[in-house]
Image 1: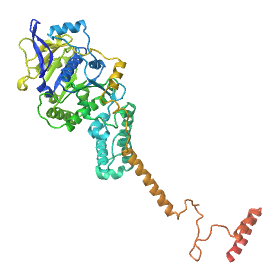
Image 2 (image 1 turned 45 degrees about the vertical axis):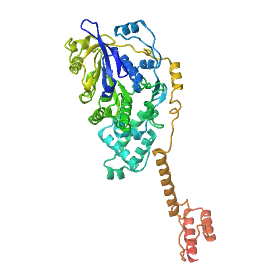
Image 3 (image 1 turned 180 degrees about the vertical axis):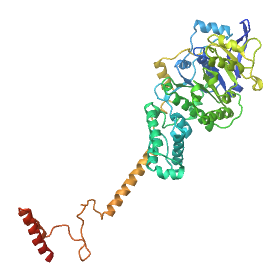
Image 4 (image 1 turned 135 degrees about the vertical axis):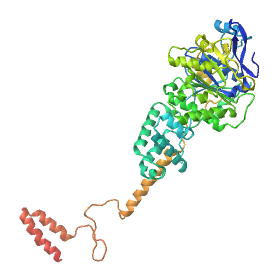
Length: 507
């Protein structure tokens, strides 16, 4: 049975289906990452809940996404239902104690948990380009935008900061192209349109301040249990690219901020990435390489990453090779791709002579899995057909009232609720534009001799003294115009103009 050095997962079975032994995850290998796979409805969420409970009781903080709302039940004490008690007896879980766990609810939209925000600068050009599905040319413009922001001291905090910077770049596209390369107005316009789409999908709630502090995901309680941070992701899944980009950003932030600690007796944090296929779907090679690098190196920061997905083929081979702790639920094998997934899953396990792994994967019952955890010296254990233990917390979602109560009593209550909009690129560029406009108006005023008004064709003329003569009419000019207006015929007006004009010139 598990102790303070391991997490009890369930019990493996002999070929005659009798009890064989307890299957455990050794905490000292908890940072070697893991994988939970299986078809819909086979028990992946329960396996995730069991592991999260085990890590929390061991003092390890956990971050996980709640795709369907079922995982929220980890915040409430479980109930002694018949099928749960029966499973506890089958795996020899004695005593079977019920618990509630210290949970912090988060939500990018601030509706079912504390708001989570990140700044545009923290996200960086690569992840922003991935989020917006930009072309190679547009991604180049995005990189230039971040470079200009750095060089000109422009803080990129929220969407309107990036929008203002892009508008400024369009205005001086020719100047920027000479220095940084091709910056075209069509590319800038395309990025602006994509930003509007993101804004309409609610991404504006995510970008801004106060930004999430990683330390708030690594809290422990006074009794030594690790906090379980649960991200409400049911609404977020309406924009799966935002979901995947956010979790990749979070994993990258952990990698960049946490110090090197090497191998510890237990991880400092465990990160569950549900619907993991969204991270790699249509992702460019540079992004997949980045994920592989983070997964490979974040282990030394004391962080364990566990991917949860339906199909093993969703995970690139380079990433899959880093996942030492495996829980494989049932797979269906009706199509050629599904049959290939079964074969691939079977081949990744250390074989067990007692059964055929590929056949067993298609015959597993709900709540049953093939399990292989790392043993001493980090060697994968022989795969075992295992009944997963029942969770100690509630199986199923909590009520809205229960959620509101937990949020109100949270240790981070009030810290992230109110958005902060300090001076950044948007305000700085507005200020620069106003200063340029005022300077131009002042220059025009100086060039016009201090007068704001001119009448084309009636400028002052210089007299013989070199001074400007008055624009006002003389008495003689006024009399001439009066006489002209009094003469009826056009011939008479021409004669009078000729006579009186010669008189005027003779003055």
